[in-house]
Structures are given as structure tokens and as C-alpha cells.
Length: 189
Image (cartoon, rainbow, N blue to C red; front, side, top):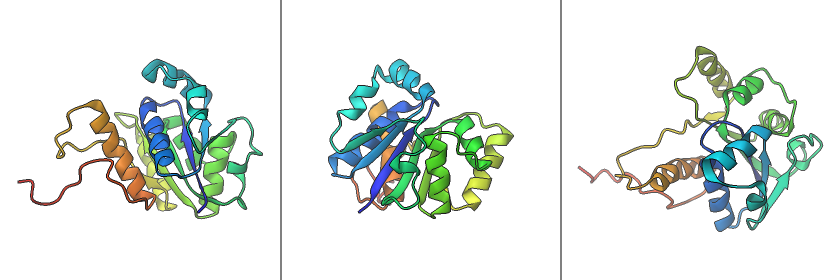
């Protein structure tokens, strides 16, 4: 099994990135983490979370977003997939233009060229036409666009329930069996 890259960009919703990293650690998946400068601010503001907290999670390797020579940017590295969660509109636009000017965007472009699973979790709302066009372009290149739009059929009781709904969907897309969130059975009504 190769590693999974998780990138956290500056869009609101840093909790999604943290929860995904925690769940990947819990199931024993080795994870490379990249955090943008804006994401450091969002982690602190939204979650009261410091970068050191991420590096202390078991199985996590923290990479510097300015280091485009890091393992995550290599086409020959044993990387299974990359998830950008949350994905800012700026990162989305750079990827749609093929711009790899930092480790997050470089790793994502490498993932696309290597035909690795790339999952982008946009958290913007409302969406500008540019966002929609960029998502369409990336989707046509086999990128999974998984908006942070939680379902409510599982009758969530907390913010954690809403977050875990999205984490479960990301894990599903990664092919990782999970029970992070309650699933629809068809017998609810």
C-alpha cells in the first residue's frame, strides 16, 4: 500500500482535513500532510489547532508546502491518492490551469499526470462561474469533486456528525471500508 497525501488549504472547513487525517491514522494508513500558509491561519481560527498537533498524529509525515522536491511531488513515489480538503477556490483555479507553484499544487498535478486518485473537497458557497468551470475541467480529467455538503438523512446530532458524513464519503472514494457515518439502508422511511 502506498501513502495518501492530505493537503489542507485556506478555505473554511479545516476540521474536514483534521478528521480525515485522524481517521487515516486510526486505520493505520501512512499519510503525508501538506498545509498552506492560509490553512495555518484557518486551523488556528476555526479549530484552535496548531501545525504541531498534526505532526504528532501517528503515521503522519508533515511536508513543507514550499518544498516542491518533497516526496509528495514525485511521480515515482509510492503514493496511492491525494485529497485536498478543504480546497480553496485559488487552489482549484491553479489546478485547472495546470499550475504547480507549491507542494500542494505540484503534488496534485503529479497525481493527475500519474493517473492517481485525486479528490478535491471544495467548501466555497455560493460558487462563482469560474469555480464551476474549473471543477468541470478537473472532473473531465478524472478528478473526484466531492463538495463539503453533508447529508441530513442520518439525522445528525452534532457538527461532528456532519463532518463525519463527508469523511465517510472521502474514505469511500479512496476505497477504504469504513463506518464513520451512518449509511442509508433503504428502510428509514
